[in-house]
Image (tube, rainbow, N blue to C red; front, side, top):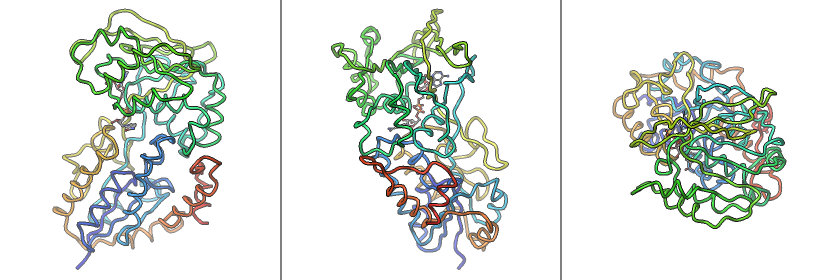
Length: 426
Ligand code: NAP
């Protein structure tokens, strides 16, 4: 009997969870090939999860087990649209699954957004995580006394925490020494995390928010008036915000202010083409929404990181609509599926993806029949001349990075594609 041949584009959590389920449930009659445009697997685990959250990054060990299985092949450094056409992939496999995530920053669409010193969190997080696309980002931290982070989600917390941590607080992380030196050189005094709504509407999770209260050189600050203005709050972060507001004022080199009812209106040029301040309009809650009060406030900032969510990008000639690939419960077309952030948008933590990916794998097994497709035999031919990184190549990269870890750090990432390809060859 011919085996069912499935291609998955993207090796982040949602793609790996689909692969794992397909081969487990497919019981020897399913072959899965996982493609990634980077030479390294695991998507957001490697490039998104903060370097000081190694416990979360440990999920890579679980995902690795899927890529290690006999029925699965990893095709790293293969970009669909550059090395292989999407239409060809669809003709070579019984089913194709897009698990390409949402690798593009949403924009605020306000004046001054393109000034130097303003970064979307996708790029900024990519920079401090050694993502090859952003390793050269010009962050100019040596002039940053005041940083403004826009958004009240967990990415905003990650960015604030990484900016605020110092030296030994990064022990056992995989922060790059170049990034660490840039962070240490910043004369940082103030970080403002600005939400456009109130403390009852934050999208943080309590564990992540609480961490801001345990930093060595930084202390969180919340205006008690913002807390007392709220009645009957059910948001699980509220008690943490209240605890921050009630803390006695202490001395710390860096303050992390959690500011509310601040709706970004414009970025103000410092006269040299760089951001010098952020202009906010004060808002007032109205139900779950907000209205403007007419008041504006300018906050000085030499660095701005917008943490307001992401959108997916096109895959070859398939364009997203409204930040995702149009789909019906994960189905795009016959034998063509989408999963994870590319399907539903940028929401949920890593474990959120597992049940969704498993349900999609079960659906594929139920509705796609093997049709004697050539699968990987055709792909190997089509990729002749492409420097494909297989799972053993990735393991060589992994070993090289761990082997060159600076003291007190768990790895030093290779941040250039050429270096990654060289390490993959051993
Ligand atoms: P998020 O949780 O959706 O938060 C986005 C924030 O941006 C919200 O506060 C939103 O405000 C604000 N925002 C959106 N558009 C805006 C605008 N035009 N002006 C001002 N503010 C705007 O997204 P995220 O922080 O990027 O996180 C993405 C997902 O990854 C989340 O599910 C998050 O929990 C997860 N994550 C988890 C962890 C972890 O578990 N450690 C770490 C990082 C990320 P409104 O609420 O008013 O729309």
